[in-house]
Length: 82
Image (tube, rainbow, N blue to C red; front, side):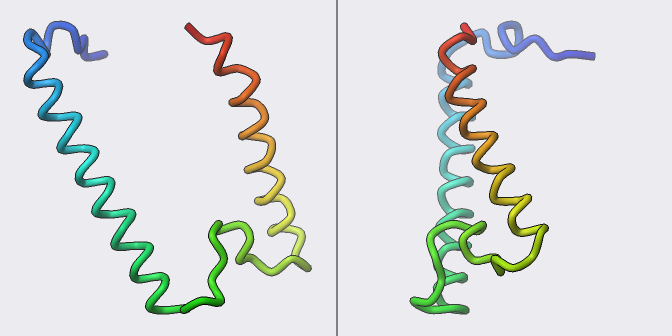
């Protein structure tokens, strides 16, 4: 059963509280993972996950090209979606 969010959020205040709380949880989680990764690996860590994978494996190349293709597809389709 699909939940109709317009009926759930009669007022904008509830939607604001939920959005802010999701943002805060995401921010804290990503910050904690970043700090933990820096403490584990130091300055040798690169900024993206796919840059840290060994380049001589085929699976690493597939993962990197998957990310590139997803970015390209999203950038082409995002302006169309309304």
